[in-house]
Image 1 (cartoon, one colour):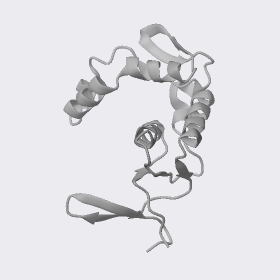
Image 2 (image 1 turned 120 degrees about the horizontal axis):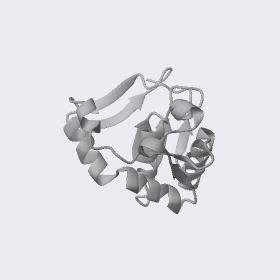
Image 3 (image 1 turned 135 degrees about the horizontal axis):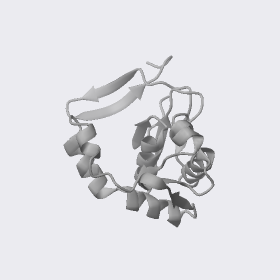
Length: 154
């Protein structure tokens, strides 16, 4: 028997984790994250040479670097940009520092501290996280995703 979730997030990287946390904040929502890797946040741990470059204070030319996604990025960053991320982290008692070039990093300089915070927040929000679960197919209906398939499921 398939378990029903209100939201299924594919990928347990920073964006997936933040999407799951945002969804879980809507009362009563059951949220699942499916991650194909054996551990969540693998790429996060590599950013900034292991120190975790969280964001950059100057994002004015970011959308120019990704011309196909420029308008989408501008809209997203208008809603949740560097200052909102720093505020979110501070509200969760996570200290950051700003280095040369406006790079924002954990005060500890340790990417694993960011991942630990995210995993703690997921547990608190009762988000279910399954690792080593690649999504092989989306189950679609016109204009709507009904579910996902993972290996071994039909």
